[in-house]
Length: 214
Image 1 (tube, rainbow, N blue to C red):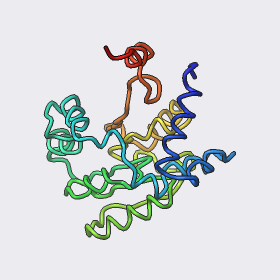
Image 2 (cartoon, rainbow, N blue to C red):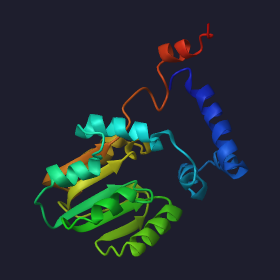
Image 3 (cartoon, rainbow, N blue to C red):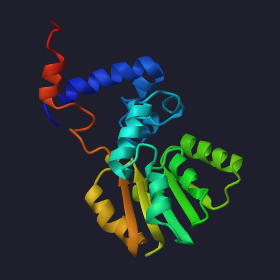
C-alpha cells in the first residue's frame, strides 16, 4: 500500500456513498471480508455508472486487444481463437451477472458454461437473464472461489473478466485450483486492468492535474 491509498480509499467511500447511499457506507465497516465483497456488488452496484462503460473507453480497449474498435474480445475469441471448436466447457470465475458468459453461450461452440460469483443477487439476476434468452448450456454457482472443487482437466477455458484483482492469493489460486481444472491444452483468459496500483493515476499525473489553469 502506498502513501496515497488511505486518502484515496476515503474519497472513494464518500463518492460511492453519494451514489449508493448510507447502506453502502455502513457495509464497508463490517469485519467480514465476504460481507464487504458482497456489498460492493449488490443491487445498487448494478445500477451505478462506471468509467469502463464509456463508449470511447470500450473502443480503445477493443483496439488494443483485438486490433479493431468495433470488435470486442468475446467476438475476437469466437471468430478467431475458437473458430471451428466444438463441445467446449468454460468456467467463468467472479462472473458477476455473467454478461460475458451469457454472450458467449449464444454460440454453438459450447457444451457447458459455468459462471461462479459470491453475490447471490447477481447470480439470481444472471439466471433470470439466461431464462429470458432460453439458454440451456449455462449454469450458475453462488460461492466463494476458494471453496470450489472441480474435477481435473474439466474445462477447456477458464475466464477472469475484471475479477482477478478482487481475489486473494492469486498465485496459489492459479497454480492449484485453476491449473488443476484446466485441460493441458486449455486457455486461461484474463481481461484485467494492469495500469497503476488499483485504479489510481501515477503521482506525476496527479501533480500535473492539480496545476492551476492559466
